[in-house]
Length: 244
Length: 241
Figure (cartoon, rainbow over the protein chains, first blue to last red):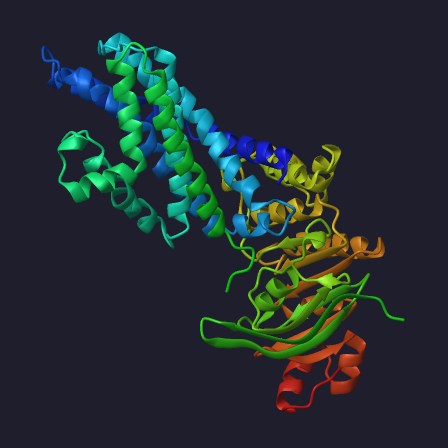
């Protein structure tokens, strides 16, 4: 692996994104619109403070999952991936290049969405804001990593998009947003203990509810980071230099 | 002693349950433009994929520049241009070429040189998606040229180009060979045979002929590559090599 090739790949992915203003707009505006909508639905109730933060953890994951899985699938179908793998490019350069590029996008998205939730929608955050942003970035990187993995199993763009509900919705249902995780039936609770989005949402809840959430957040972040590494490793196994 | 760019020994490739290359052995000399000619479906692309090391092969050996095809040491020395242009449509011509130059660690000056070599300097800042099909395949070629490869493997690089451009590209290929580089160029257009130092005629995964054009014409009594190809098929199993 080479740092230079990872960086130029990240730069190339960002340059591609930059030429696509509408995608950037959607990545930044859609989370804000949804958060605003929720705040409006639950105005004058304490509900938004509870789920608003959780959603800040879900959006970056979902958006980056979709963008990444489609983008890497495009590399596979256009032949550019095959071509890159005939060059000195390592699989890791490719994976981490993507993770880095979308990680940068995630920072921007997290800053915009968090700012909007706190200052426009009036989300109450007891803990430090920077931790909220950090968790959002980590969630986005998680989305990128799992998106890279999922794209390995998709042959067409249609399939790639269908993987979104397949990979994301079960996690969304079990992450504690609808029913607190400790009130889930045993089997589902075990399942939710394994899935990464649960930890993303837990971390977000800790930051909003506690004034000193550092230790809890760090623990959750550790689990998410582990998932990122596992997904990137398995994802890189789906990149083959030789194909039939 | 003859110097070979590619040595293939009893190569067998099966794709999707179909035997594409049953048992192919051939040696491609270095420092020449070798044309890989044959109708579509004859196994040209599969052979090319095996040479650049992206094809899963069932058996046999492919050695490129003295090393097993696809080995790490070759990734800097072999340039590969796929049949469908594999470039990024949403980036400019220059950004595409620069990306491949950066991956290969080539200096920035090489980028403009490669863009000029394929005659796209006037379009250097245009997004590739806005270009015509022929222009896009030239961008793809520039991305391979920028790495200064010892062996350039090109799958149908001249499809859809106007005659002037085709002539210019063949002149480029000739000048690269004159610098001592090896080129393997596939085409289904038989007229391009006259541009090659040596021809490899492929049909249904078998080498029908491996000879220079004059040798081929003399052996078959034909007037051009196309009729020589037909003559060889009519003769049946007899192979010229």
